[in-house]
Amino acid sequence: MASMKATLEYEIALDENALAGLKTSMSGTLIGPEDEGYEQFRRVYNGMIDKYPRLIARCADVADVRAVVNFARDNGLVLAVRGGGHNGAGLGVCDDGVVLDLSLMNGIRVDPDVRTIRAEGGCAQGAVNHAGSAFGLAVPGGIVSSTGIAGLTLGGGHGPLARKYGLAIDNLLEADMVLADGRFVTASAQQNEDLFWAIRGGGGNFGVVTSFLFQAQPVGEVIAGLMLWDFEQTGEIMRWYDQFLPAASEDLYGFFAIMNVPPAPLFPVHLHRRTVCGVIWCHLGAREQAQKDLDAVRESHPPMFEQVGPMPITALLSMFDALMPPGLQWYWKGDFFTELSGAVIEQHLHYGARLPTLLSTMHLYPVNGQVHRVRPDATAFSFRDARYSMVIAGIDPDPANNEKMIDWAREYWKALHPYSAGGAYVNFMMEEGIDRVQATYRDNYKRLAALKAKYDPQNLFRVNQNIKPQS
Ligand SMILES: Cc1cc2nc3c(=O)[nH]c(=O)nc-3n(C[C@H](O)[C@H](O)[C@H](O)COP(=O)(O)OP(=O)(O)OC[C@H]3O[C@@H](n4cnc5c(N)ncnc54)[C@H](O)[C@@H]3O)c2cc1C
Picture (cartoon, rainbow, N blue to C red):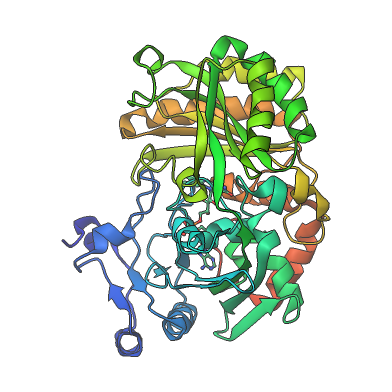
């Protein structure tokens, strides 16, 4: 169905000849506001984002990507690149301009002999790990399967394998890319090394990644699941978690959450909708060792509920999918922390007790182990010395709750920010301005700005946490 709003409000007159040329050169599809599918494909994961691009280009291959990049650049159009469309700030879509949608480019090739996985730029991370699971392999990444491997990796990519195997970028071997001038290049430790440095944390600022080559890690079955404690115990559990996890074997990962218990059959009815704190565990070691490590938790702080057991890693990495389908309203803010001081815990107790909606939550993802062994200037991802990547997420199906969710997230963040390390994980930011982007890249920003001037001097790729080309 055509979008009336879009049809009425567009002022851009596209060069019809250029558009016809693009159409004939593409093997994928072009969708305009009048076309079937426009409503579906202008939408991104975050239902709060409501943008009306002039054109959506569903690319089928590298030739399509080059044609679309050249078309947007030559016609002075804003260009948004979309991998999985999961970005909280909605940076996979734009008003008026062109969306370069990679979702048709979702091929995956696993090489079990050398343990690598090649994934095209439009793959969801769940699909990548599903392909790897047939060979007992996985790529470090996040906790929801529909998240795009592209945006996640280009921002850093932390998740249950991080303590043992590092970030997604620490397992990236090379990336094929289309640059702002239309050139196709490979970035790796051997080719275009400066570009390879920049894309490992620098987001989509440097070009369109058409395929990634990852070193996959040997991960099959894990012992995983969640333990919950009464909200009253939050301070005590946070203090204990802060000491316990860094000292534990790097086979053990656990992220901390303040959340409401979903009214789902998995949970006893008396816990439904109660605010609790919890840890979502993932143990990569042998069963006996996992039992021992998790028994240590049970003995020191017996949970009021737990659901922990053996499962394929793919089951853990899709555990939250049903709870968080596309189209919910999301507003989130993040920061890195180096300590969970008394003052920090106090704010978590205050705002954690006031979750504005059933799905709203706060997560603390541990940053330690293998992540700390890479120097802050070895890749663009600067906060290697942080200990936690925090996200405060207001989530709800009903837009009527947006105002209270946004107010809560902002207030919570404002109260904690003075105790933070100063910057945030780029993948947990809304559109927050250049100061926040600079604070996030710290000493790496200057080099990133110089590389931006080298690879994208006109800032064609600016629908992202934008790094301005050095003048
Ligand atoms: C429910 C949920 C759970 C999450 N869990 C985690 C987690 O556990 N760990 C974690 O690290 N992050 C997590 N994230 C954050 C996630 O990493 C970011 O939202 C990320 O931006 C998503 O990538 P995408 O490709 O889906 O997004 P998109 O919206 O498609 O793109 C995000 C940004 O990357 C750019 N981009 C996308 N594809 C390409 C490409 N091929 N080439 C160049 N640039 C590109 C876009 O232009 C945009 O700026 C989660 C997000 C959600 C919504």
